[in-house]
Image (cartoon, rainbow, N blue to C red):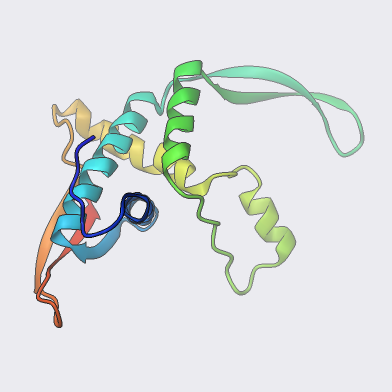
Length: 168
């Protein structure tokens, strides 16, 4: 994949783009230079497109588990189909893991209970929140265009053009 050099060695450049793409998906908005934003936008759009295609690709299965009293109970769970699992793993291989933030008035047990089903919060946010929202847009005939850039002007010091990159 041909991309801009951005004045960095390749390992630093890849790490910076992964970090900014993760931050964009996690928070929905980043402030960066125009050249970096163009690269991040390209990567983020591809990841979101992959998530939109596969987010609803699962099936309900009935599994037997044991409860607190050691009794066998049947539970219905949503299980990913192989194509969704593959897409999830592709996205996980690119994005960094960001821990779910703990509020200051929340205890450890409450935090664990709230986050027990989210091993990879960024990927879960992409599949649970972002992909369904953009799938609705895709029904209207719009493909792509998941991000928006606003120019902020020149950065003080080196006059680099600064932009706000955000999810639409």
